[in-house]
Amino acid sequence: MKKTTILLIRHGHTVGGEEKRYKGHIDVELSPEGESQIRSLKQRFNGLIETTNAVYCSDLKRAIRSAEIISEGLDITPVIVPEFRERSFGIWEGMSFEEIEKAFPREFNLWKSDPLNYSPPGGESTMEVQKRTIEALGRLLNQHRGDTISIVAHGGINRVILCHFMGIPLSNIFRIEQNFGCLNIIDLYDDGVPVVRLVNG
Image (cartoon, rainbow, N blue to C red; front, side, top):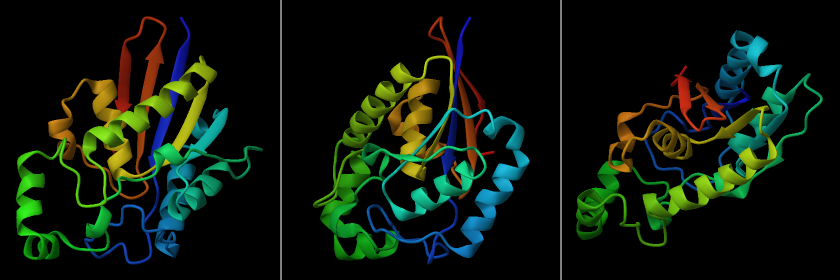
């Protein structure tokens, strides 16, 4: 039975990452701490990462740089997949939870009441993010049956992918933690049953 393995990685800590603000599409750089996190991840899981046949990443700098570190020594060039970009929070990007609630009370309440379908002004809903992410992932899996692939993305994207394979309703998306520089391992077998071996490692 053939097995396809996804090594799903969240990018490392970013410049300004200690501030709890929605980054979304804001193209912040990986911080020195973030580079260290990804190098530590690669060292810890090197035996698995060195089996990677391809590395894919979001088109944002923090994911690209993380993917470059993962690819070092593998003779692999990361391939950018724009659909793996973090969720857009529209005009809320760069703001904290408290700032959004204060500046946009009506919209904030709409978002809280229907987080799956409501999109912040100028942004995306969770359902829209799921659609673009899972469609792109499906195309990659069709190309890599039996391979091991690394995907370097974002907290929101990783949660969507994990919910998809674990059969978890998207309404529970924030019950899954995704720390900077974490690894998730997903095995896909020919019988169609996915096995998630590691979450937020």
